[in-house]
Length: 341
Image (cartoon, rainbow, N blue to C red; front, side, top):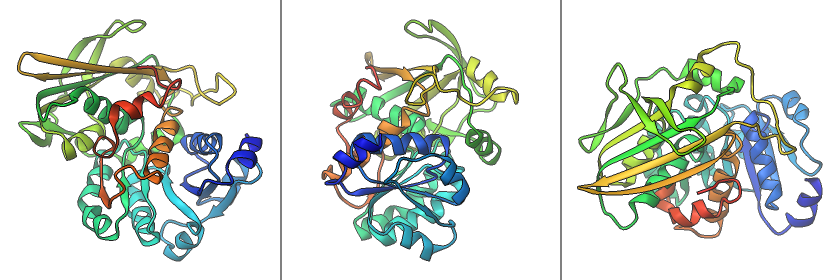
């Protein structure tokens, strides 16, 4: 990996990753290096950065979230900032302004609805004024579903209903996932009657007939940040987002261990399948994507977004959903072989 960095990354600008020593952050650093981007690994703890074992050539920096001067210093020379440090309720409010001040694109990978919603509400005008693109939730939960729904929508200007169904064969949560779950206790929202509204309590259940190897799965309606993203740019009357119940049992079990690497890249053996249905009247359109490891797939998602932004994809200022900035079908196709459509 260090050879890839030294041989291919000279002509590309450096990308900063805050929370680089975390589980997802390390995947993002690897993906940046694989694509030839110099990486700046930033964190709050020098010891954790050192323990992450980044290749030689990766610049390592320490900066506290509340230290705006330190953030400005460590972002010097960066062409974009990727925030992988959760809970994003506690980090985005510092890192979005830091990116705007430095005038570089900001992206994060939050699954937390309140964080993504706050980013749209607080920073749309400042980002537009400074000409900086901000994309929250550019990860498995959020960005992937938004892109699939956008791709399925195609040339339709609106739809009556979108349904997003996610199946995981297991869920071995990281420490960051557990901490975020304790912090993120807000009541979830979805799109109903054309606007964001609270999900009914208790949440509705369903059975979804997935393709193999999952087959029919018991589901619970559980919207993540895709609801915030989709609401920002697509005309939908109703959105229903489901997750199968089996991985939720893993998540709620405090004895479930963290992910274990199953290959040389560090990716676990976890399988996922996301299926989307869009309905307008009697017409139905579908899209689907499958792969391994919901944490690992976040890396090519967010790095592909960075690369496209730097190559001029609708390079304007504001807060955007990925489907509002990128050609969704082309973006998803570019993720092969990490993502199978």
